Length: 292
Image (cartoon, rainbow, N blue to C red; front, top):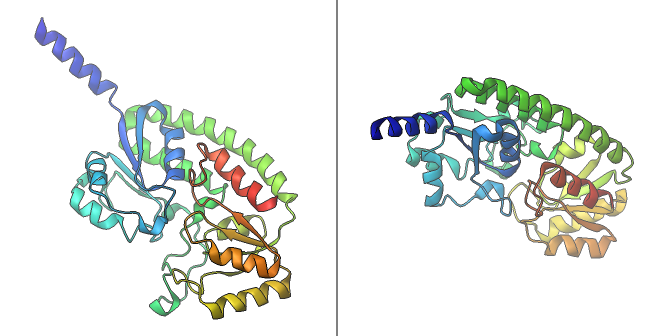
């Protein structure tokens, strides 16, 4: 009798075992949860409060990677500074590069700002292009499709569930985008400067021109000479908005704003960076802070 009971428990546990999905960032995690629903357990590795290029590779992340069935990464070189050593030490064959349980989302996105050549003289540029595509709310649909296909591949028993969740999410997100795009059409801000080129995909989507960055080169701290040149460009082109992310220092942006009469808009680069708990809250905060 005890053997029958134990067998029943084991079979029941196997039937309802969730797929362990690790994502490198929160926006990816939110989309994965929408598509996976009750069939997955999503763990986000990187905190949105910090620079996504330099997540601290804590030992606690190893345990998460070791039990993962699927790893979804942003790609485009964004995780290059922290993820590879964790993957080597985790030694999980399921999620190695090229394995069934490995998904590089950048392979599904049309990358922009692809450099013609790569050199340290140009700063910390990414050879594959700008990796910050998730700031464009339209890319969420691309993420959702790639995740649905990958989940169905590694967990075919729940393929119908993933397909159903995907269809419902697409319908919901398309309705959201229709309203969002209409609001952005009314946004009067068409000229900005950024601290780092975090928002190029969003700016391109809504035809907003960036006149420069506070960083003289990607990953290089601002200099006095470059700051003065940037202020000159802003005055000549009547640029009145500075896009400041949550993790870079803010003193330089405040200084430039004081000298040019511009406004500093704090813009989140990932869901949760501003305290947002849903995808809608995240993208709404970008629009609200930019267009106010």
